[in-house]
Image (cartoon, rainbow, N blue to C red; front, top):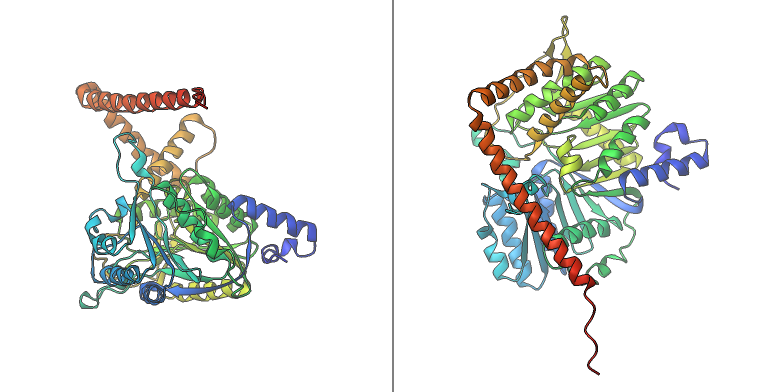
Length: 489
């Protein structure tokens, strides 16, 4: 029997409603429930890196490695050398790196020893002249699958920055990963294979056959939610969890830029008596995103959502836990870039023991956090401020600034069309938006060429792209409709 509906007491007494809830979750996530797994939490970078290296060294048939960032440092070189050793031993090693994530972090030359040893490397979505905005979609997944034995995923990139810097008194980054054993490993491998096929030639049809007979490894039920650009499986699932949580919904997110529908879902849950908490970084590796996150605190606080900021060097985890029975861990942040723009990978676990371990970790994390509250004049302030160590260095994820711009556009659109009443926090953002539009208007009147020339350039570029694709589509259509040559026999 599915563990999911029992996570929400409303459905405990009605078998048909339990099945309906199971169906709703499967359809929302676009992922079936997989039984018979074992899931272990891996807290922070060192635990993840150690487990990865041990698994890589034990590989006998295949290693599938996919990550947003591979940084050229001693940690990455150690993992790469382990991959090289396995490739020389005849193990099939395949690596997917993201072009933007690795920009300024490492070059393709980092992987020359692996390629020379027979390994394979593909890069996700480098800039192309024929795709002006294609670069906005990223492969933000963090995945390692070794043989058909074990899979790892979470928020950890391949970079020594996750280990901190003891010489500079910089603590390790706070992040969460998981190790998965059991039938779900096949779905993790399948997500890699699908992405690999979009970047070049497909793997042989029987590549996943060895994953079909994975034995039961435990009693944990889970879903593998592998999203690609323009799909919203995890967003629908997050909305559904916010709607169904009865007692607690505790969220951790590195780059929170909540869009209006999700803000409203969390606010509605809090007003209904659910203990909704949000833990975010106090100091971010992308300061602009930290500012955008803070701009969204007010409607949450006004609704009764408790917001906490991490006091350490960087909080990079992406997790959720509801009612002590359901938990999510993966690469997806709570913003439009992850929900709609990127390739992401998460697991949604329906198991009391796992969720309670997550709640225990969450409670421990709050011990090193500062709560944000509304002051006497409804100003946002820190409650019991604590010392925060300065953040050193850049790195981590990107694309959240676009999410903040989208949220601002959503507020401005609502104001212009009068389609809904704006909350106090949204109303504040309209002043900046109005000033920005006024500035653009003034520039257009006084120096029209500053606006016109770039607009003309983009128009010609997009026109060339669309016409090229039109003629390409016409050519393919004509070839498909062309009658086959008669058989000479």
